Amino acid sequence: MRLICPPLISKKEIRQKVLELAREINKSIQVENLHAIIVLKGALFFASDLLRELPPIASMDFIRAESYRGCNSVGEVKIPSENLPDVKGKQVLLIEDIFDTGLTTQRIIECLRERNPETIHLCVLLEKRKPREGINISSDFVGFYIDDNFVVGYGMDYNGRFRNLPDIYILDIS
Ligand code: IMP
Ligand code: MG
Image: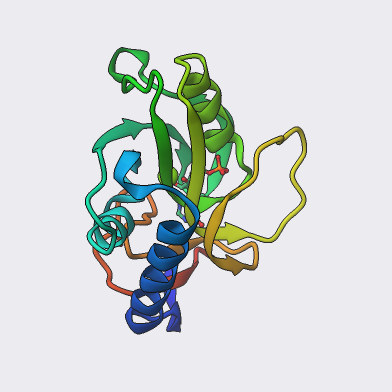
């Protein structure tokens, strides 16, 4: 297993993109009413950088979902329902690290919709270019479109490792 160098996306490129995304979000939605929901753990660093570039938002919360074992999506998404945030009547900005198969995000959005938010916007740092079956949601704000490789760093992990790297790398697991 090794990280492929140089990084796919450097911390400088991430920084620029975060600023761009913050500007775009600020222009397109009313930030002062926003209820940000951060999908743990992968989106932690991204959301913390992004949210600090926005004017004051209304509130923020976390949600936890798991569908990955190693590099493979297991197709079943676990969201502990007891700690789903209260989103009734709120304008939600859901912040995710990566849109891969789309299953996790779709499941989270379904769970949130059952709780009657006013709106849900989806912001992802990375979106993999790939065909998706049975997915009827799409991202409103995307940082980078990438090829279908497994990536780590800037919050994203392989079995818990590499999250703390400031740049994003392709991981070669052969
Ligand atoms: P999805 O359900 O297949 O869209 O994947 C959802 C979650 O799997 C993402 O939010 C990530 O936490 C994780 N994931 C997907 N692709 C990668 C990757 O390339 N590296 C690290 N984590 C990933
Ligand atoms: Mg995630």
